[in-house]
Image (cartoon, rainbow, N blue to C red; front, side):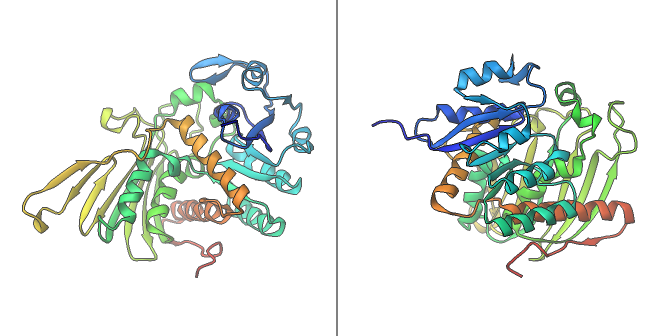
Length: 362
């Protein structure tokens, strides 16, 4: 069997974490091909699997034909059908806007935007152009979370009554290799809390109301002292389910239970069984003995690079079959709406209703 024709051109913006997208060029049965890349710092060593390689070396290794001098030059290329944006969070809105205006379909790493106003603009633009946009919420392609979702969808957990999710990550070593996070700085509500918020939305549907607290950890003087970087959030969903979210990014990293692969985790408490990360326990009152078992990853256990290939293949299918992406522009905007309501709650000290404007089902 011969290789599939590489006839869907992809441009990549931001070759830091985005370097993992280049792997698609070596996937023989994928039609996607990275044909051009752009990074504002092409001469810096890029971290790829912990080996520093300059952009020119990566391009040569993966057969990328063109290194663009500017983002505008990349967008002007007629051989690109879509653009993957892996730049710092504050740049997402204007770069997505420019890509859509240039007629390119878009993959953008989380978050879609960093304000409710930006999210509204991008929803309107996607609706107007008819182009496809995928928000690359990588946890949706994580083999562990996909296995949990399959268990949930099978009904074996019963009705979910309570849930919680977390993203706990000492960001000091991340600051060392991506200084933009404290220089711009990164907003950890939109850029971090969006992970557990999106996970819970996947399982529980739309949020109705939030109440949030924020604080500053103060461990790293590089991050501005007037910015919150630790969060505790309560969420009430339209179904009546309540949940809590912990987003903590300025702390000494917790013990091994919370370390990789569990920087991000989820717990679901159902009427038949409860899940915590990779374990499920069934109701001991409904059977002769308690039954606890491991949740096996769905397919091969994936690292972050594997998750990236997963959502690239998904987007390829959406382009080929004209399907809706799993996390499209409205899904991404609804996560931004939840995070925006959390900020309003922190400022006001009050519970805040989450806008329904991006939900076409209500």
